[in-house]
Image 1: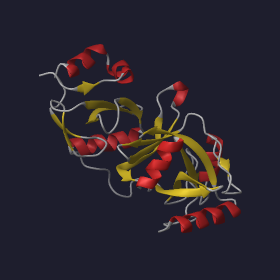
Image 2: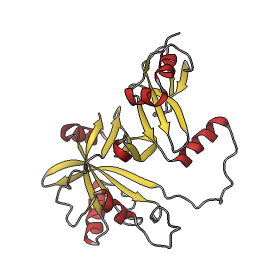
Image 3: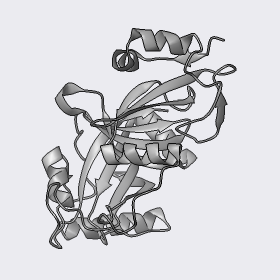
Length: 259
């Protein structure tokens, strides 16, 4: 039975016309599925469904999502992350704990930041551990800010100044929830997730309204231990100002993708 599938041109180019046509005809496509975005059940026979192709260095996995959550697209992910997803799907044993160094996780907090009398939607990113430069074993140093500056983020000395736009980066919000921060793909390819929520994060109505008005999100980033979990936006602002005064804050403005 034909499925109500959306197959983007990027996905079709990756899987080929024959496979795309088979999916649309109902072959190799499930009727029911768990949405790869919101993790709730979906039915491709009853509602529009997006095909989402996750591509690693050697592995590719085709997943499905409600079209109202995210559009059909190709998402570049790290090979180890994709292999982990495949293991969880197939039920293979996970790696032995302690066999690899623990990976730092990027914590993301949303809030409204007042700059020159205007409220701006902002995200504050802080790792849970020091970030080592790729290819190094880590020696106790933290290369998080230098790596971001190399990507185009700018050091912040005054939070009252709106940061510059960072070309090719964007903040993905779908159905009023925060899904990812996207960075440019290699060699002009599709954008890849620099940070992606394990589950979409709720944002306040005020944050969403401000983002839809400006179509821009300010993304601030600081090394581990610089900001912390702040229960109120005024305390978050104070923490940002202290990090900036200590030379431990970078930022960029990014267009809003989605609604």
